[in-house]
Amino acid sequence: MPRTTAAFAAGIGLVAALAAGLALYGTGTTGGNTGACAGAAKTAARLAPLARGEVAALQVLETPRPAPAFPFKGPEGRDVTLAGMGGRTLLVNLWATWCAPCKAEMPALDRLQAAFDAKDFHVVAINLDTRNLETPPLWLKENGIRALAYYADPTGRVLPVLQKETGTLGLPTTILVDAGGCTLGIMKGPADWASEDAKRLIAAAIGRP
Image 1: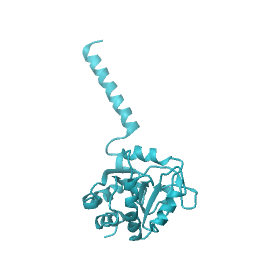
Image 2: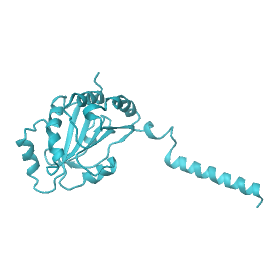
Image 3: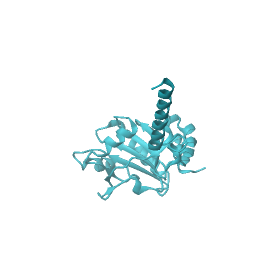
Image 4: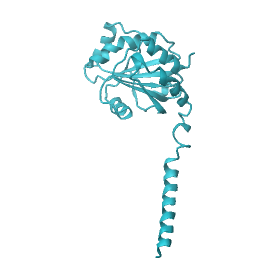
């Protein structure tokens, strides 16, 4: 085959491969935030400058993505999901009684929940203890945690999903999810969630002026 013909054939093959790739993955203009989380990009941009002070470690996503799907136990012991809590901003926190930094931030999370209407904002603090399951709710009661509903994952299904989603292996881990079910930001480690910095951040996520 002449060199020019071979080059032409190779070019055709490359175009075909690119076309197949675009069909499979989409392009930069049709993928990403043009899907279910397209509107969340504006919220994330509004939050980025507010990730400072006590919540400076929050990693605000430039490209929000659908929150991970996993079942866990609700206050009445039945399986619930984040999708089932849609329509309000969620702060999903993973904690355990064997995690000292987790327990240290629980009172702040409790005060944060008390500062906002539960119809607009809900702290979903999911306990990860898999043994002595009576201990976590008792610890919350003994430490005056009253605004938070009790959620738990005694089967150990949630942690691997959140580890993959956030890229962290430690606790506490927290994700901020908007009312449309899109992850806006990730916090690796504890924070003072009762601080004015945190309240401004959450107010912006909800859409308050």
